[in-house]
Amino acid sequence: TAHIASLKWTRPAYAKKLAKIHPGTDYAKTPSEDFASTTIEFETSDGYTVIGEATTSWSGLLTDLERRGLSAPLLVVTDGHAGLKKALEVWSTVRVQRCTTHKGRNLEDACPVHARGEMKRDYHRIINADDGLAARAAYDAYVKKWTTLCPAVARSIDEAGFDLLTFYDFPKAMWKSLRTTNTLENLNREFRRRTKTQASFGTEAAALTLLYGLVAFGQIVSHTVLEWFGLS
Image (cartoon, rainbow, N blue to C red; front, side, top):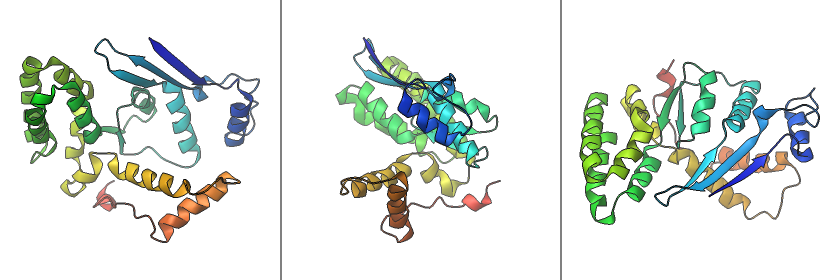
């Protein structure tokens, strides 16, 4: 079974929002599938709940970022949204790094409880290797071993593939920051915690002012990615 929720250009409130972001087009009359936001939630034959996101919603996000001056990034770290990865094809040079923390949780979910300790030790040999070559060897050994012990675990890591190892191509001082989305999620978590105390915000600018102030005055500290200035 599946449940589909869509936020389409045909909805007046959304069309009005798009018109503010991209002036000059009447989105209430002009189809704009690039800005349709769709999520699909379904249950697999193994009993796992999966939430999918449509490519078009991510395309709209990337279009808006480009409009605001963002050039093609060197790397995008993601939890594994297939729609985002597909949308990133507009930037031919961008690299993709799958979040090793989230994939680790996926692997635990796929693994029997009694084998999780061994599975995690094998997984850590991949993401905590001395270099990319050692990580690739550990990855190959992991897939071979767990294909026999627990095929669901092997399928789960294969879903991410070598996108788990992209961070090894960057300076070693950056590895801890680049291999996970947790740094950004911690920042977002703090934002949510602080804004929950407010009954409401009159405007979007009011919320942004509060969030900027929390960072600017050190109330929320964002983790620094080391050696970022050496990238080109």
